[in-house]
Image 1 (tube, rainbow, N blue to C red):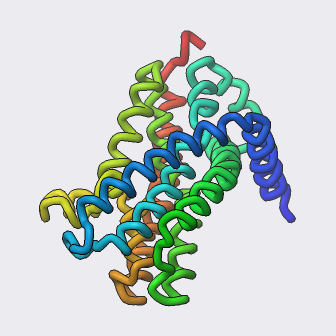
Image 2 (image 1 turned 90 degrees about the vertical axis):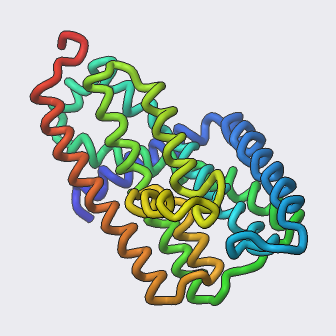
Amino acid sequence: MSHTTAVDRALIVISFKRRLAYKSGWVFGLALGGGAMLISMAMWHNLLGTGSLSGYDWESMRAYLIIGFIAATMVFGASDFTIADRILDGHIAVDMTKPVDFQRARGAEYIGSMISTAPTAAVGVLGAWLLFDPPGPATPVAGVLTAVSFLLLFPLAFGITYLSILVCFWTKRYLGIMWLREALLSFFSGMMIPLAFMPGWLQAVSWALPFPHFTATPAAIYLGQVDVPGALGLIAAEAAWVVGLWFAGRLVFRFAVRKVTVHGG
């Protein structure tokens, strides 16, 4: 194992353990996210009844909402303020002197914090499964490809979050940026409502962004709304966003540390 990989693994473990120390966060996340999911279940059950809307009936909507809950728990439960604080309080000046790549180190920490959301997601999914009995994946292959799509959410979520955090170099504030990012992600990913319910032009705008891969892509694969080549195409697009956002983050960071002064440092 290379030194760099060992450092990545150590940072993931440290971040994971740090988040595990705050068990109240699990309870809060489960109450907030799980409660929202149950409310959505009740609402869509009343709206759909025995009918369907834009290709979604009550059976498929149950699975869709659970997939959205898992994605939201993973993404919104991750630790992003710790990265932003390093920029805002000037600690990044110390990070720049360390023989560790800043972006890669923060990525490992972020992914570790995402992994720590697994207990919350697991309990929420178990409860929803017992209460609503959603359908399984359309095929075994669809189940495997859905899992692959979820795995890609880890680097994809970091790429979007990292770029938004770098804006702190100019704004000296992060809370508003975080709210904007989460609002855009919730809407354009399909977490609020399936993209199929939106006008055609808005669907086109959504699919031109990385956000649909948080909910719409795994849901479409899981429910069999796309065949295997279509599912592989969606996963390839998701992977392309991961790579593109990573290099975009490196480019913006290189410009930011040269052009921006942080708190007079």
